[in-house]
Image 1 (cartoon, one colour):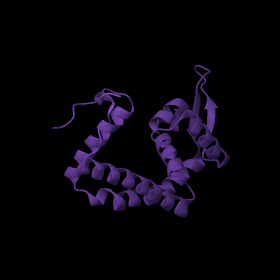
Image 2 (cartoon, rainbow, N blue to C red; image 1 turned 180 degrees about the horizontal axis):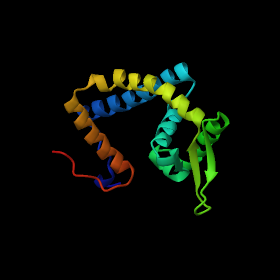
Image 3 (cartoon, helix red, strand yellow; image 1 turned 135 degrees about the vertical axis):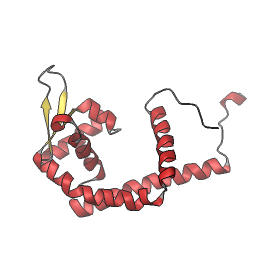
Image 4 (tube, helix red, strand yellow; image 1 turned 90 degrees about the horizontal axis):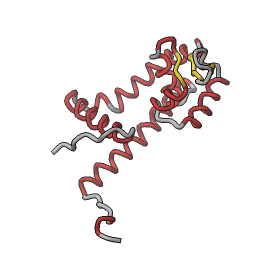
Length: 162
């Protein structure tokens, strides 16, 4: 193994950043999930699906696009939607125009649950994240997270800030 295959080990500041980032993301997801489950009997992942569907025209979306938007595998999303179907929150239906695609469609019960759970979720997001950073920090963090997300989705990486 030559020097070009040596890992670029993280420095002290980089390690501090990485560990705080991953630990925060993990604890935040768990906290938001717990608050929704305890108050409304819905997981944070299911809540996210309901939000995305509610924002679509006709409150429906192709399963393949929904998987991409929610950063889920098609298989995992299929299991999640099946569970949500059994709970009466969504339904799957075939695409009439091409006969190949499957849509996830928000049902009235899912819409009601979303409307009931939204205040709990936004309260948690504000308390745990938004109110702890300044508006200027929010802009910077959004730009940084969008750059990381773009790279993870396979887009060309933007220039690294100096």
